[in-house]
Image 1 (cartoon, rainbow, N blue to C red):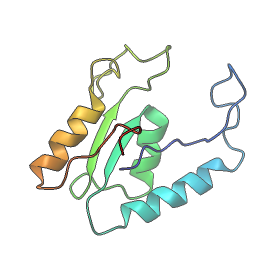
Image 2: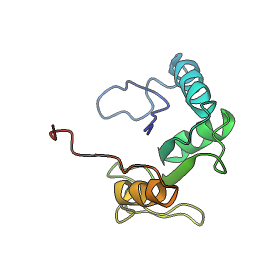
Image 3: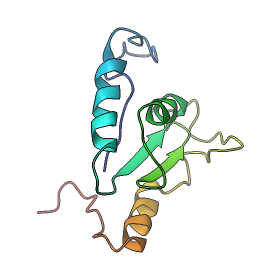
Length: 115
């Protein structure tokens, strides 16, 4: 499972303030490397920037599990678009496990406190 961010740092209260300062090259290379893996990977793409970067770096929805929604930030979490559901109510972790189960793969343990 990969939950990518396009830019890994920002100034507090300033979304995308560190965009175009080098992060996109690093995160794009990570996406491309993971997308090249032969086994299916779950990509949770939250927000338009993550979705665009995934498309541009070879994330193939016919091979991988690609679940997209709006970004979970307060500004967009409840807003849906024609092609992408709102984050609120999208149940991304449940949907991911439904998809991996449908492919005969083991479910993902999302509880980080589990042993």
